[in-house]
Amino acid sequence: MKVIEPSKEDFVKNIDEIIYTQEEPFGGPSIFMQYFVMKKAKEENCKVMLDGQGGDEILLGYERYYPAYLLDLNFIDRIKGVFNASKNSKLSIKQLILYIIYFTRSNIRIKRLKFKNNYLKKEFLDNINKKILDRNSKSYLNIFELQNEEIFHTQMPHLLKYEDKNSMRNSIETRLPFIDYTVLETAINLDNKVKIKDGWTKYILRKVAEPILPNNIVWRKNKFGFEAPVKSWLNEICQDMETVIKNSKIISKISNNIIFDNLDNHQKWKLFNIAKWEEIYNVKFD
Image (cartoon, rainbow, N blue to C red; front, side, top):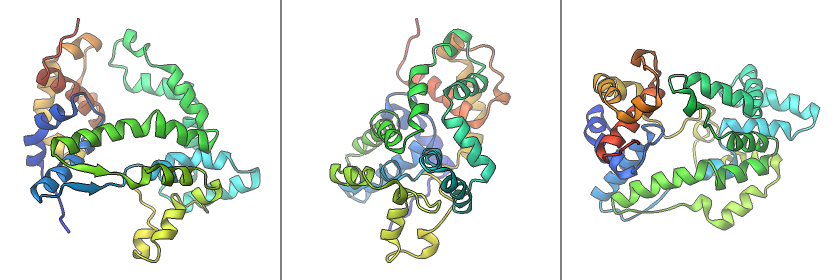
């Protein structure tokens, strides 16, 4: 087994390379983690890799799927479902209720987006595509519709695009068994009661893995994604980020006066990523 532990130095050294590879701005540094895996595979002369992309979308692995699952239940089972979901995940009952309210109400999501990104000029904030958010929020009322939305329109398309570019850049062919059409069709047509059962996400996959893996892995509750150590990485380039953002013609065009220290790390990365993309590809903004 090969373990990859990218350092802060690796991150800094490869910023331009990975933004160049992706060809457009992307939401967070987790893309770097996948790139480093592909890079190591190339060094090990591994030409083909299996990847777990799509498992969460077809088997309801994300906690944001709870609202659709709970709303599909009758009243009594819904009450039980809330307690089970809280018991078998890292979400409290209060958080679950807030998830239901937030993900099924596009007007709340739009207001939150505008509030969090109020450094953008009003003319650009007003261009938020409300139809996409309306459609996405409505899909939370039905598990099948939500899966269809994420597999074909929102989540999977951009995840596959990131992976395709990271792998091709390193001459790697990736294969994705979870989204083989027979697996996908079978998974999304399962009864909702086994997609999430007693509050356990990806229940059927956990049962399949139970005879193979230790229980503390199979039944773990603290799910997290392919996370990068964002805080320590961005702290390493904090001053450079501020300078690059301030020098960006695109950002100055679309934003009001940005107070860098008032931004959270997610916002800092997104603006920095846009500015670096602009610099690397010599992008002009008319």
